[in-house]
Each structure stands twice: as structure tokens, then as C-alpha cells.
Amino acid sequence: MLQLSGKQSTNETLPKQFQVATQPHRYGSLITGLIFLSGLVLAVTHFGEIEHFVKLMREAEPVWLVYGVLLQIATYFVIAGAWHQTLRYAGVRYSMLSLVPMGIAKLFSDQALPSGGMSGAAFFVTALSRRGISTQHCMAVMLVNLVAYYIAYFLAAIASVILLWFYHAIHVWIVVVAIVFSLVAVVIPIGALWISHRGKSQIPKLFMRIPGLTNMLDALGNAPDYLLRNPRLITEITLLQLTIFLLDSATLWCMLHAIGQNVSFLAAFPSFIIASMVATISPLPLGLGVFETACVLILGFLNVYNEAALTATLLLRGITMWLPMLPGMWLARRELR
Image (cartoon, rainbow, N blue to C red; front, top):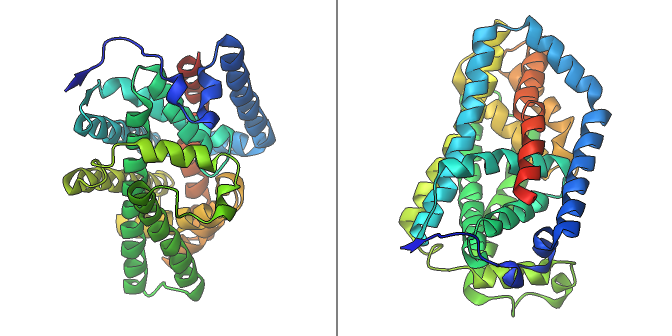
């Protein structure tokens, strides 16, 4: 087992898109300032939504709101557990509790710089490397969790469609969304595994012209591939990723109860998952607007009044997105200093 003993200089092996954050102070200040500026713009441009969220918080049942916040805190511990478990299989000993703040900071990075998850991935690899973990292990953790995430997402999507079919709430557009998302959820992990096994030599040259892709593939190729070939590890991380989906769905369930809607968890789960799928395949940053619309529609199909569905959805978005904004901003700055 590899015992960490202080920070190592790993910048030389970092992909180019990750190196800027680990350069001397001027570059660290640059990326920190960029994230802060983006977070500020995000907050200002959606100030009305934040204000509405605060008003809804005042009118909702406090106990259920507390339950929802606790469930969201639990998600950060679960994702930290997934990272910790992957590092353990890679032979790296690291405290799980110390990874929890990184989960909040990564969420903020994804929100502040919407880029299909690349900003959060760049932050994650940079933060881990600054903690003395080799780039190969950083990329391995990211890759294993990416594969497990989409496997879990795909399983959750199938379960959601089955539940909606059981409730006679299935519609053509839901099937279309499920098919499109399933293609994405299958292609990404298979592609990651294929690249890890074959390398980038067989990838069409047209794709290799995409900025940053070559460096990313180089880094993925250097990741320990034995982790991806470990079915026990993939199963464990997939179960942890599924747990996060369940916790997020339970948060929506709590928000519905907070406004007096006695709704089954089996109705909240497919509503959250389908809405998340719509947001994932949508070109809009963070799925703003489309997530809320889809969630309200699904809840409506399951006999929840539109007004109540919208209120619960906005409360959910507030707790999962706006509430972690300030601590995420502070933690991101601390990680990149």
C-alpha cells in the first residue's frame, strides 16, 4: 500500500488542460478568479430564482427541509466514499473525511463553469494532484467513477421507465428521452473502457482535432487499467453512485412533504431521474428550465398538482444547487490556493 507523506510535484505529468491550476501563484490566482467571477455571474443572473427559493423556504415545513438538507449532506459523504474506495483499490491510503469538502467544491466548479462536466473534472484532478496523489491515480479515480456513474444512471433510467409504465404515466417523449439518454449512458463507459484498452491510436483523426481531447486521452491511457477490470470495484462504486441518485430523489420526496404533499417515494424517484436525464442531454447550462419543466410534468402525470410540483422542484433546486454555492466557492478557493 502506498502511504502518502506530503505533497508531490505532479504538474509535469498533468494534462495541459489541468496544468494551469498547478502553476505558480499567478496561474492559481487566475483560475481562482475565473471560478469566482463565474460563480458571481451565475448568482446575479439568477438572483430572482434565489430570492424565490428563500421565500419558499420560509413557507415550507421546517422539519422536512432539515431532512432534505441532511440527505444532501449525505450525498457528499457517499461520493467521497466512492473516491476513497477507488484510491484504496489503487493502493493509496487517504482519509475519506478529507475528501468530503472536495465534493462540495467540485459541485460548485461544475455550476460556475458549465462545460459538460469538464470544469469539475479539471478541478477534481488538480485538487487531488495538489494533495500529493499522482496524476495516474487521479485519472483512474475519475475514470472509474465516470464509468460507474453512467452504469448507475442507466439502471436508474430503466427503473424509472418501468415505474412510470406501472403507474400508466408513460408518454412518447419520455421514451424518446430514455432512448437518447441510454445511448449516451452506454456509449460513454464503453468508449472509456475501449480507449483504456486500445489507446487513442484507432480514434478517427477528426475527433483528435478537438481542443484538449488528445491530452485527456493521453492521461486516460496512463491511468491504471486494472482498476477498470476489477468487477468488484466497479460494482461497489456503481452501488455508491446509485445511492446518490436515491438520496437526491429522497430530497425531492422531502420537498413534496414539506409543502404538504403526501407523495410516495416511488413517484419522486422517476420524476427526479427523468428530469435529470432531460437536463443531461439538454444543451442548456445546468439544465436550467428544462429540469424544472420535466420534473413538474412527470409529477403532474403522477397526480401532483402543478403548483405543488413546481414549488417542490424549486425547493429541490435551491437545496441541491443554490444552498451549496457559498461553501462551494470558499472550498474551491481553498483547494486551488
